Image (cartoon, rainbow, N blue to C red; front, side, top):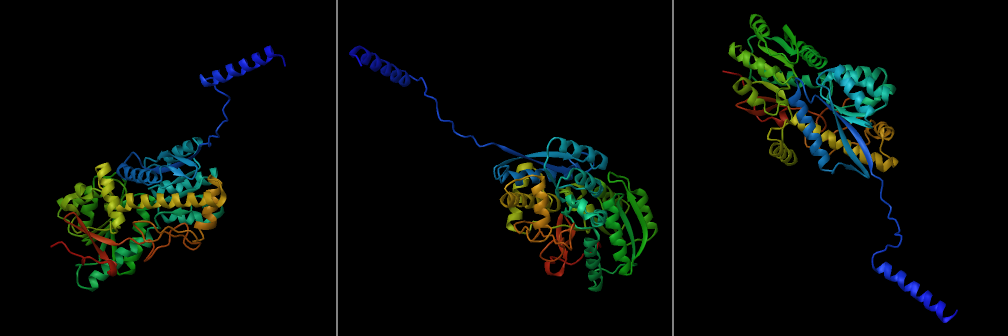
Length: 424
Protein backbone atom coordinates (compact mmCIF):
# COMPACT_ATOMS: atom_id res chain seq x y z
CA UNK A 1 0.00 0.00 0.00
CA UNK A 2 1.33 3.47 -0.88
CA UNK A 3 2.07 5.95 1.89
CA UNK A 4 -0.84 8.11 0.62
CA UNK A 5 -3.38 5.22 0.77
CA UNK A 6 -2.11 4.22 4.21
CA UNK A 7 -2.64 7.77 5.51
CA UNK A 8 -6.16 7.89 4.06
CA UNK A 9 -7.05 4.54 5.69
CA UNK A 10 -5.64 5.66 9.02
CA UNK A 11 -7.53 8.95 8.84
CA UNK A 12 -10.79 7.16 7.98
CA UNK A 13 -10.41 4.87 10.99
CA UNK A 14 -9.71 7.87 13.22
CA UNK A 15 -12.84 9.64 11.98
CA UNK A 16 -14.96 6.57 12.69
CA UNK A 17 -13.55 6.24 16.17
CA UNK A 18 -14.06 9.94 16.81
CA UNK A 19 -17.67 9.72 15.66
CA UNK A 20 -18.24 6.84 18.07
CA UNK A 21 -16.80 8.88 20.93
CA UNK A 22 -19.03 11.81 20.00
CA UNK A 23 -22.21 9.67 20.37
CA UNK A 24 -22.86 8.00 17.02
CA UNK A 25 -24.07 4.65 18.32
CA UNK A 26 -22.89 1.34 17.17
CA UNK A 27 -25.82 -1.05 16.65
CA UNK A 28 -26.68 -2.32 20.18
CA UNK A 29 -27.33 -5.94 20.99
CA UNK A 30 -31.05 -6.07 21.80
CA UNK A 31 -32.02 -7.15 25.33
CA UNK A 32 -34.99 -9.50 25.29
CA UNK A 33 -38.01 -8.00 27.09
CA UNK A 34 -40.11 -10.62 28.87
CA UNK A 35 -43.63 -10.72 27.52
CA UNK A 36 -46.19 -9.44 30.01
CA UNK A 37 -48.93 -12.02 30.47
CA UNK A 38 -52.29 -10.81 31.69
CA UNK A 39 -54.67 -13.08 33.56
CA UNK A 40 -58.19 -11.68 33.80
CA UNK A 41 -60.14 -12.93 36.82
CA UNK A 42 -63.83 -12.21 37.32
CA UNK A 43 -65.05 -11.36 40.83
CA UNK A 44 -68.81 -11.80 41.19
CA UNK A 45 -70.86 -10.04 43.86
CA UNK A 46 -73.76 -7.67 44.58
CA UNK A 47 -71.74 -4.48 44.22
CA UNK A 48 -74.94 -2.44 43.94
CA UNK A 49 -78.59 -3.05 44.83
CA UNK A 50 -80.25 -4.29 48.04
CA UNK A 51 -77.17 -6.21 49.23
CA UNK A 52 -74.61 -3.59 48.29
CA UNK A 53 -73.12 -3.45 51.80
CA UNK A 54 -72.30 -7.14 51.47
CA UNK A 55 -70.86 -6.75 47.98
CA UNK A 56 -68.60 -3.92 49.11
CA UNK A 57 -67.07 -6.22 51.74
CA UNK A 58 -66.52 -8.97 49.16
CA UNK A 59 -64.78 -6.51 46.84
CA UNK A 60 -62.56 -5.00 49.52
CA UNK A 61 -61.47 -8.41 50.82
CA UNK A 62 -60.50 -9.56 47.31
CA UNK A 63 -58.51 -6.36 46.78
CA UNK A 64 -56.63 -6.81 50.04
CA UNK A 65 -55.76 -10.43 49.22
CA UNK A 66 -54.42 -9.65 45.74
CA UNK A 67 -52.48 -6.64 46.98
CA UNK A 68 -50.53 -9.02 49.20
CA UNK A 69 -49.23 -10.85 46.11
CA UNK A 70 -48.82 -7.60 44.15
CA UNK A 71 -51.48 -8.76 41.68
CA UNK A 72 -49.04 -11.36 40.34
CA UNK A 73 -49.30 -15.09 39.78
CA UNK A 74 -45.90 -16.23 38.53
CA UNK A 75 -45.21 -14.29 35.31
CA UNK A 76 -48.89 -13.34 35.03
CA UNK A 77 -50.26 -9.96 36.06
CA UNK A 78 -53.76 -10.28 37.45
CA UNK A 79 -56.51 -7.96 36.28
CA UNK A 80 -59.66 -8.16 38.41
CA UNK A 81 -62.91 -7.76 36.51
CA UNK A 82 -65.79 -6.78 38.79
CA UNK A 83 -69.05 -8.53 37.87
CA UNK A 84 -72.02 -6.84 39.55
CA UNK A 85 -74.94 -9.22 40.06
CA UNK A 86 -77.11 -6.50 41.64
CA UNK A 87 -78.74 -9.40 43.55
CA UNK A 88 -80.61 -10.32 40.35
CA UNK A 89 -79.97 -13.59 38.46
CA UNK A 90 -80.85 -12.13 35.04
CA UNK A 91 -78.61 -9.12 35.55
CA UNK A 92 -75.87 -11.43 36.78
CA UNK A 93 -76.09 -13.58 33.65
CA UNK A 94 -75.71 -10.55 31.36
CA UNK A 95 -72.85 -9.14 33.43
CA UNK A 96 -71.03 -12.47 33.52
CA UNK A 97 -71.35 -13.03 29.78
CA UNK A 98 -69.98 -9.54 29.19
CA UNK A 99 -67.02 -10.38 31.42
CA UNK A 100 -66.42 -13.52 29.35
CA UNK A 101 -66.40 -11.39 26.20
CA UNK A 102 -63.89 -9.14 27.95
CA UNK A 103 -61.59 -12.11 28.37
CA UNK A 104 -61.89 -13.52 31.88
CA UNK A 105 -60.31 -16.96 32.23
CA UNK A 106 -61.90 -17.83 35.59
CA UNK A 107 -64.15 -16.41 38.30
CA UNK A 108 -64.28 -16.34 42.07
CA UNK A 109 -66.78 -15.57 44.83
CA UNK A 110 -70.49 -14.69 44.74
CA UNK A 111 -73.13 -14.12 47.39
CA UNK A 112 -76.69 -15.07 46.42
CA UNK A 113 -78.02 -18.60 45.98
CA UNK A 114 -80.41 -17.73 43.16
CA UNK A 115 -77.51 -16.13 41.27
CA UNK A 116 -75.45 -19.28 41.83
CA UNK A 117 -78.15 -21.53 40.36
CA UNK A 118 -78.27 -19.46 37.15
CA UNK A 119 -74.50 -19.10 36.87
CA UNK A 120 -73.99 -22.85 36.79
CA UNK A 121 -75.32 -22.99 33.24
CA UNK A 122 -73.32 -19.96 32.11
CA UNK A 123 -70.00 -21.28 33.36
CA UNK A 124 -70.72 -24.73 31.92
CA UNK A 125 -71.63 -23.33 28.51
CA UNK A 126 -68.50 -21.20 28.28
CA UNK A 127 -66.27 -23.62 30.26
CA UNK A 128 -65.16 -20.98 32.74
CA UNK A 129 -64.09 -22.45 36.10
CA UNK A 130 -65.62 -20.47 38.95
CA UNK A 131 -64.28 -21.02 42.45
CA UNK A 132 -65.74 -20.44 45.88
CA UNK A 133 -69.27 -19.11 45.60
CA UNK A 134 -71.20 -18.30 48.76
CA UNK A 135 -74.51 -19.31 47.11
CA UNK A 136 -75.30 -22.16 49.47
CA UNK A 137 -78.70 -23.50 48.45
CA UNK A 138 -78.95 -27.26 48.07
CA UNK A 139 -80.38 -26.63 44.59
CA UNK A 140 -76.77 -26.13 43.53
CA UNK A 141 -75.90 -29.51 45.03
CA UNK A 142 -78.83 -31.19 43.33
CA UNK A 143 -78.00 -29.74 39.92
CA UNK A 144 -74.34 -30.61 40.27
CA UNK A 145 -74.99 -34.17 41.39
CA UNK A 146 -77.42 -34.72 38.50
CA UNK A 147 -74.80 -33.74 35.91
CA UNK A 148 -71.34 -33.41 37.47
CA UNK A 149 -69.39 -33.82 34.21
CA UNK A 150 -71.07 -30.75 32.72
CA UNK A 151 -71.56 -28.59 35.80
CA UNK A 152 -68.24 -29.04 37.55
CA UNK A 153 -67.13 -25.60 36.43
CA UNK A 154 -69.11 -24.45 39.49
CA UNK A 155 -68.19 -27.19 41.92
CA UNK A 156 -66.45 -25.52 44.85
CA UNK A 157 -68.97 -23.79 47.09
CA UNK A 158 -67.64 -21.52 49.80
CA UNK A 159 -70.74 -22.09 51.94
CA UNK A 160 -72.32 -25.50 52.54
CA UNK A 161 -76.02 -26.24 52.05
CA UNK A 162 -78.15 -24.50 54.66
CA UNK A 163 -79.49 -27.62 56.35
CA UNK A 164 -75.94 -28.62 57.29
CA UNK A 165 -75.69 -25.49 59.45
CA UNK A 166 -79.24 -24.90 60.75
CA UNK A 167 -78.96 -28.01 62.90
CA UNK A 168 -76.48 -26.04 65.02
CA UNK A 169 -79.25 -23.67 66.12
CA UNK A 170 -81.55 -26.50 67.08
CA UNK A 171 -78.83 -28.27 69.04
CA UNK A 172 -77.97 -25.04 70.86
CA UNK A 173 -81.62 -24.43 71.75
CA UNK A 174 -82.30 -27.97 72.90
CA UNK A 175 -79.13 -27.99 75.02
CA UNK A 176 -80.20 -24.72 76.66
CA UNK A 177 -83.65 -26.15 77.42
CA UNK A 178 -82.17 -29.36 78.83
CA UNK A 179 -79.80 -27.36 81.04
CA UNK A 180 -82.59 -25.10 82.30
CA UNK A 181 -81.20 -21.96 80.70
CA UNK A 182 -84.47 -21.47 78.81
CA UNK A 183 -87.95 -22.67 79.75
CA UNK A 184 -90.20 -21.76 76.81
CA UNK A 185 -93.92 -21.53 77.55
CA UNK A 186 -94.69 -23.57 74.42
CA UNK A 187 -92.79 -25.19 71.59
CA UNK A 188 -94.45 -23.11 68.88
CA UNK A 189 -92.10 -21.65 66.31
CA UNK A 190 -92.40 -19.29 63.36
CA UNK A 191 -90.39 -18.70 60.19
CA UNK A 192 -89.43 -15.24 58.90
CA UNK A 193 -87.09 -15.49 55.93
CA UNK A 194 -86.31 -13.91 52.60
CA UNK A 195 -88.27 -15.32 49.66
CA UNK A 196 -85.28 -16.69 47.73
CA UNK A 197 -83.61 -20.05 47.19
CA UNK A 198 -81.32 -19.31 50.11
CA UNK A 199 -84.17 -18.14 52.35
CA UNK A 200 -86.18 -21.31 51.73
CA UNK A 201 -83.07 -23.47 52.13
CA UNK A 202 -82.48 -22.20 55.66
CA UNK A 203 -86.20 -22.21 56.49
CA UNK A 204 -86.64 -25.80 55.31
CA UNK A 205 -83.66 -26.94 57.35
CA UNK A 206 -85.00 -25.25 60.46
CA UNK A 207 -88.51 -26.63 59.99
CA UNK A 208 -87.37 -30.23 59.59
CA UNK A 209 -84.93 -30.10 62.50
CA UNK A 210 -87.28 -28.22 64.86
CA UNK A 211 -90.10 -30.66 64.17
CA UNK A 212 -87.76 -33.55 64.92
CA UNK A 213 -87.05 -31.85 68.26
CA UNK A 214 -90.77 -31.61 69.08
CA UNK A 215 -91.53 -28.09 67.85
CA UNK A 216 -94.63 -27.03 65.94
CA UNK A 217 -94.25 -24.57 63.05
CA UNK A 218 -97.19 -22.23 63.71
CA UNK A 219 -96.61 -19.48 61.12
CA UNK A 220 -94.41 -18.84 58.10
CA UNK A 221 -93.63 -15.56 56.35
CA UNK A 222 -91.38 -15.12 53.31
CA UNK A 223 -90.63 -11.59 52.14
CA UNK A 224 -88.54 -9.91 49.46
CA UNK A 225 -84.91 -9.47 50.42
CA UNK A 226 -85.39 -5.67 50.34
CA UNK A 227 -88.48 -5.82 52.60
CA UNK A 228 -88.77 -3.26 55.39
CA UNK A 229 -92.40 -3.70 56.57
CA UNK A 230 -92.93 -6.66 58.93
CA UNK A 231 -96.18 -5.58 60.56
CA UNK A 232 -98.17 -8.56 59.28
CA UNK A 233 -95.48 -11.06 60.25
CA UNK A 234 -95.09 -9.73 63.79
CA UNK A 235 -98.86 -9.64 64.36
CA UNK A 236 -99.15 -13.21 63.05
CA UNK A 237 -96.46 -14.49 65.39
CA UNK A 238 -98.08 -12.81 68.35
CA UNK A 239 -101.51 -14.20 67.49
CA UNK A 240 -100.07 -17.73 67.19
CA UNK A 241 -98.23 -17.41 70.54
CA UNK A 242 -94.92 -18.14 68.87
CA UNK A 243 -91.92 -18.25 71.25
CA UNK A 244 -89.20 -18.87 68.68
CA UNK A 245 -88.74 -17.23 65.25
CA UNK A 246 -86.05 -18.24 62.80
CA UNK A 247 -84.97 -17.32 59.31
CA UNK A 248 -82.26 -15.75 57.20
CA UNK A 249 -81.80 -12.68 55.02
CA UNK A 250 -79.14 -11.21 52.75
CA UNK A 251 -80.78 -7.81 52.25
CA UNK A 252 -79.09 -5.02 54.17
CA UNK A 253 -82.28 -3.74 55.82
CA UNK A 254 -84.28 -6.96 56.28
CA UNK A 255 -83.35 -7.97 59.82
CA UNK A 256 -82.68 -4.46 61.16
CA UNK A 257 -86.25 -3.55 60.14
CA UNK A 258 -87.76 -6.77 61.50
CA UNK A 259 -85.98 -6.52 64.86
CA UNK A 260 -86.87 -2.85 65.29
CA UNK A 261 -90.56 -3.51 64.59
CA UNK A 262 -90.64 -6.61 66.81
CA UNK A 263 -89.15 -4.56 69.66
CA UNK A 264 -91.62 -1.71 69.10
CA UNK A 265 -94.51 -4.21 69.31
CA UNK A 266 -93.08 -5.70 72.54
CA UNK A 267 -93.00 -9.07 70.81
CA UNK A 268 -91.20 -11.44 73.18
CA UNK A 269 -89.66 -14.44 71.47
CA UNK A 270 -86.26 -15.97 70.95
CA UNK A 271 -85.15 -14.86 67.48
CA UNK A 272 -82.73 -16.57 65.12
CA UNK A 273 -81.59 -13.88 62.68
CA UNK A 274 -79.25 -15.93 60.54
CA UNK A 275 -76.98 -13.50 58.73
CA UNK A 276 -77.44 -10.39 60.85
CA UNK A 277 -73.72 -10.45 61.59
CA UNK A 278 -72.94 -10.30 57.87
CA UNK A 279 -73.42 -6.58 58.29
CA UNK A 280 -70.07 -5.61 59.74
CA UNK A 281 -71.72 -2.67 61.51
CA UNK A 282 -74.82 -4.65 62.54
CA UNK A 283 -75.10 -2.93 65.93
CA UNK A 284 -75.24 0.49 64.30
CA UNK A 285 -78.16 -0.81 62.24
CA UNK A 286 -80.04 -2.45 65.15
CA UNK A 287 -78.82 -1.06 68.50
CA UNK A 288 -80.66 -2.70 71.43
CA UNK A 289 -83.16 -4.43 69.13
CA UNK A 290 -80.46 -7.06 68.52
CA UNK A 291 -80.16 -8.00 72.19
CA UNK A 292 -80.66 -11.74 72.83
CA UNK A 293 -80.79 -12.51 69.09
CA UNK A 294 -79.10 -15.71 67.91
CA UNK A 295 -76.93 -15.94 64.81
CA UNK A 296 -74.15 -18.06 63.39
CA UNK A 297 -70.92 -16.26 62.82
CA UNK A 298 -67.23 -16.95 63.06
CA UNK A 299 -65.37 -14.45 65.20
CA UNK A 300 -62.00 -12.75 64.88
CA UNK A 301 -60.39 -15.38 67.10
CA UNK A 302 -56.80 -15.73 65.88
CA UNK A 303 -54.09 -13.09 65.90
CA UNK A 304 -54.08 -13.15 62.10
CA UNK A 305 -57.85 -12.57 62.01
CA UNK A 306 -57.71 -9.68 64.44
CA UNK A 307 -54.89 -8.07 62.46
CA UNK A 308 -56.96 -8.34 59.27
CA UNK A 309 -60.03 -6.83 60.98
CA UNK A 310 -57.96 -3.91 62.27
CA UNK A 311 -56.32 -3.34 58.87
CA UNK A 312 -59.70 -3.49 57.13
CA UNK A 313 -61.28 -0.98 59.50
CA UNK A 314 -58.30 1.38 59.32
CA UNK A 315 -58.28 1.34 55.53
CA UNK A 316 -61.97 1.39 54.72
CA UNK A 317 -63.29 3.16 57.86
CA UNK A 318 -65.86 0.42 58.30
CA UNK A 319 -66.09 -2.77 60.32
CA UNK A 320 -65.51 -6.11 58.62
CA UNK A 321 -67.75 -9.14 59.00
CA UNK A 322 -65.95 -12.47 59.52
CA UNK A 323 -68.64 -14.23 57.48
CA UNK A 324 -68.24 -11.92 54.47
CA UNK A 325 -64.90 -10.14 54.51
CA UNK A 326 -63.14 -12.90 56.39
CA UNK A 327 -64.37 -15.77 54.24
CA UNK A 328 -63.92 -13.79 51.02
CA UNK A 329 -60.34 -12.99 51.99
CA UNK A 330 -59.56 -16.61 52.90
CA UNK A 331 -61.13 -18.02 49.76
CA UNK A 332 -59.38 -15.47 47.54
CA UNK A 333 -56.09 -16.63 49.02
CA UNK A 334 -57.14 -20.25 48.48
CA UNK A 335 -57.67 -19.40 44.80
CA UNK A 336 -54.26 -17.71 44.67
CA UNK A 337 -52.71 -20.90 46.06
CA UNK A 338 -54.58 -23.00 43.49
CA UNK A 339 -53.51 -20.71 40.63
CA UNK A 340 -49.87 -20.80 41.69
CA UNK A 341 -49.89 -24.60 41.97
CA UNK A 342 -51.69 -24.88 38.63
CA UNK A 343 -48.91 -22.86 37.03
CA UNK A 344 -46.23 -25.00 38.67
CA UNK A 345 -47.96 -28.21 37.61
CA UNK A 346 -48.88 -27.45 34.01
CA UNK A 347 -46.68 -24.47 33.10
CA UNK A 348 -49.66 -22.38 32.01
CA UNK A 349 -52.46 -20.52 33.74
CA UNK A 350 -55.73 -20.52 31.87
CA UNK A 351 -59.25 -21.81 32.17
CA UNK A 352 -58.34 -25.30 30.94
CA UNK A 353 -55.45 -25.82 33.37
CA UNK A 354 -57.37 -24.33 36.31
CA UNK A 355 -60.33 -26.58 35.64
CA UNK A 356 -58.07 -29.61 35.33
CA UNK A 357 -56.22 -28.79 38.55
CA UNK A 358 -59.53 -28.38 40.36
CA UNK A 359 -60.67 -31.81 39.22
CA UNK A 360 -57.42 -33.64 39.84
CA UNK A 361 -56.22 -32.03 43.06
CA UNK A 362 -58.83 -29.91 44.84
CA UNK A 363 -61.91 -32.08 44.31
CA UNK A 364 -59.98 -35.17 45.40
CA UNK A 365 -58.92 -33.56 48.69
CA UNK A 366 -55.23 -33.66 47.83
CA UNK A 367 -54.92 -29.85 47.86
CA UNK A 368 -56.38 -28.05 50.89
CA UNK A 369 -55.97 -24.59 52.36
CA UNK A 370 -54.69 -24.35 55.93
CA UNK A 371 -53.46 -20.75 56.10
CA UNK A 372 -56.93 -19.23 56.56
CA UNK A 373 -58.05 -17.11 59.49
CA UNK A 374 -61.73 -18.08 59.71
CA UNK A 375 -61.75 -21.88 59.32
CA UNK A 376 -58.95 -24.19 60.40
CA UNK A 377 -58.94 -26.14 57.13
CA UNK A 378 -60.73 -25.60 53.82
CA UNK A 379 -61.11 -28.96 52.13
CA UNK A 380 -63.22 -30.71 49.48
CA UNK A 381 -63.58 -34.42 48.85
CA UNK A 382 -65.41 -36.51 46.25
CA UNK A 383 -68.07 -37.15 48.92
CA UNK A 384 -68.51 -33.49 49.90
CA UNK A 385 -68.41 -31.61 46.57
CA UNK A 386 -69.73 -29.17 45.72
CA UNK A 387 -69.76 -28.39 49.47
CA UNK A 388 -66.65 -28.05 51.61
CA UNK A 389 -66.08 -30.61 54.34
CA UNK A 390 -68.16 -29.56 57.36
CA UNK A 391 -67.27 -30.27 60.99
CA UNK A 392 -64.78 -29.67 63.76
CA UNK A 393 -61.40 -28.72 62.33
CA UNK A 394 -62.96 -27.85 58.98
CA UNK A 395 -65.95 -25.66 58.14
CA UNK A 396 -67.95 -24.85 61.26
CA UNK A 397 -69.87 -21.77 62.35
CA UNK A 398 -70.40 -21.31 66.08
CA UNK A 399 -73.81 -20.15 67.30
CA UNK A 400 -73.59 -16.75 68.93
CA UNK A 401 -75.96 -14.57 70.91
CA UNK A 402 -75.85 -10.77 70.76
CA UNK A 403 -76.07 -8.55 73.80
CA UNK A 404 -75.13 -4.87 74.14
CA UNK A 405 -73.37 -4.89 70.79
CA UNK A 406 -71.21 -7.89 71.68
CA UNK A 407 -71.44 -11.48 70.47
CA UNK A 408 -70.80 -14.49 72.69
CA UNK A 409 -70.47 -18.09 71.53
CA UNK A 410 -73.15 -20.29 73.10
CA UNK A 411 -72.50 -23.43 70.99
CA UNK A 412 -70.62 -25.77 70.60
CA UNK A 413 -69.77 -26.61 74.18
CA UNK A 414 -66.03 -26.70 73.50
CA UNK A 415 -66.08 -23.07 72.31
CA UNK A 416 -68.77 -21.76 74.64
CA UNK A 417 -68.22 -18.29 76.12
CA UNK A 418 -71.64 -17.92 77.77
CA UNK A 419 -74.91 -19.73 78.30
CA UNK A 420 -77.99 -18.84 76.29
CA UNK A 421 -79.65 -15.85 77.95
CA UNK A 422 -83.36 -15.03 77.94
CA UNK A 423 -84.74 -11.52 77.83
CA UNK A 424 -86.11 -10.68 81.31
